[in-house]
Image 1 (cartoon, rainbow, N blue to C red):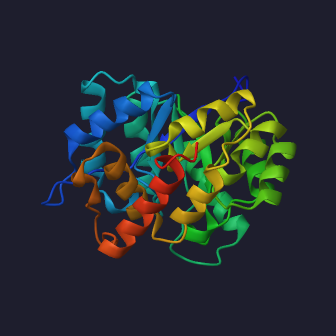
Image 2: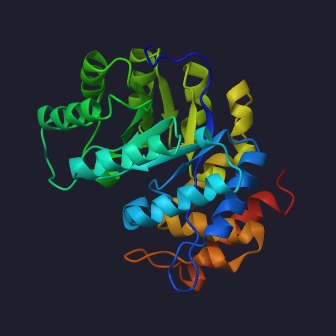
Length: 298
């Protein structure tokens, strides 16, 4: 059965990963956070993606976290698994683990270590990957985040993969922030889920036929995003909020705001090579948030 779009995908939180002071995943806090996001209107969350520091988590850690989330009562199909691997075997193994644990969707980057790889080579890698998971129930969301991977997933590559594996490609997450690219994807692949990573363009993308988002902002402000699915006018505070985040290292800044909004200092910890915000940066981003949301600018 083709992996075509039947309805909105919804808001999936690109869930950030809490660590203890020793650097281990704080599984209890992760489960608590995940349940809170689902209760606030997120239909799912994406585990081990960019905001979740997925490339810096071992396979054993991700497996243990996934199992703990399920044991806490979260439904298997509410957990999207980030597959950010350059080694084909590791990507296949991660996908099959996700399938065994009941996930429906996986978010997959292209291999990204060797820069300047041709589309031909990237397509060959993806087709080998897709062939290898043909015995699973997984649906693949292709992950376009060229500012991080330096490996774009362009429209022609997407079309080639849909042509060869029409039943496996559910859609694309576009985290480029390029509005023209988002419009092309929505128009050209109207039967697939086009998900937006840059929340500043989510409202206009939904209006054109986009399906939803996998969003870092959803970690602390899902209420700004969920109404957009029904055509609400974007909250005027959303763009300045995202602009503020982008002036800092984004993942530590997101974690700072999760901690700030939940009054939990545990969220400040990140895993090297990322570093925690400086006190000056922390005060700037939290003050920016408070100016928008706490001091009467409703």
